[in-house]
Length: 319
Image 1 (cartoon, rainbow, N blue to C red):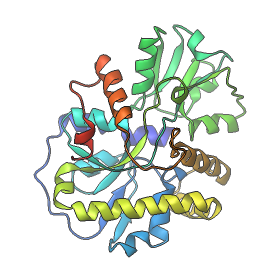
Image 2: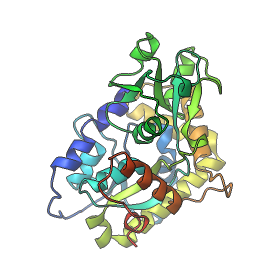
Image 3: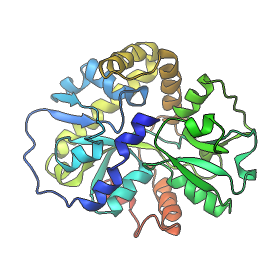
C-alpha cells in the first residue's frame, strides 16, 4: 500500500490549492500517467502499447508512471501528462474543487473496496471499531456507509503497508479487492464471507477506475482523445482474451519500474480487475460510465459533505 498512498498524498491538496494553469502547448508524444506504480491494474494500457494499438491509431504514446514528488494529478496540472486514471468518486471530488476533468473511457463497472476484519467478525457488528483508511483518499464510499449504518468507526489513517493491521493495533482495515486483500492473504490471513464486507454487494456499487483528461486539453484534442480511448479499450479486450501473455507484459513493466511484487499476486490482481470490468446487469464489458452510479455517488457524497454541488453525468462526459 505504501507506494500507492505516497503517490496520492498531495493529489487533493493540489486540486484545491493550484489554480488552473494557462494552457500550455502540448508537443511531442502523448503522455499517459496511471495513478499508481506499475501493476496489473493498468494491464490494458501496457498491452495497447506493446501490441502497437496506439501506434495503429497514429499515436506516439509514452507511459510515464508517477513518483512521490510528481503525482499523476500534479503532472496533469502542470500539463506534463495528457491523461490519467482515477476512481469515479475521487474524480468527482477533484472536479468539485475546481479542476475540470473529462471521462474518455470507463474501464471499471464495479466497486472494489472491502473492509476486512482482523477479529473474525462481520465488520457491520463492530460498532466503534478502529478501522484503517488510506491517508490519501479512496475511502469516500466507506465513510458514507459507516455514517449511514451508524457504525461510529474510528478511522485510523495509515501511510505504510499494513503494520497496524498485522500487529493487531486496529480491528479492521479498508482494502482493494484486487490488491491489498490478496497481499494480506499471502501474509497468512484468512478471510471469509463472515469477516469481509464488500461494498459492491451492499448497495454501494460505485464504479472505480476510468480514464480522464483535463477539459482544456480535451476540448482542443477530441480526435486524439477518441483514438487513445479506442486503442486503450482494445488493449483491455486483448488482455481479457490472453491473460498469461498479458502477465508477461505486466511483469516487464513491473521490472522496468523496480516494483516489488510477484507474478502470483499480479495474476490474482489481473483476474479481479477483469472481473470488475464486467457489468453485473448485462454480463458484458461495457466500458461506459453508468448514469445511475454517478447519481448514487452524488447522493452519497453530497449528503456527507464531500461535494458542494452535483457533478453531473453530462459534465463528466462533456455532453
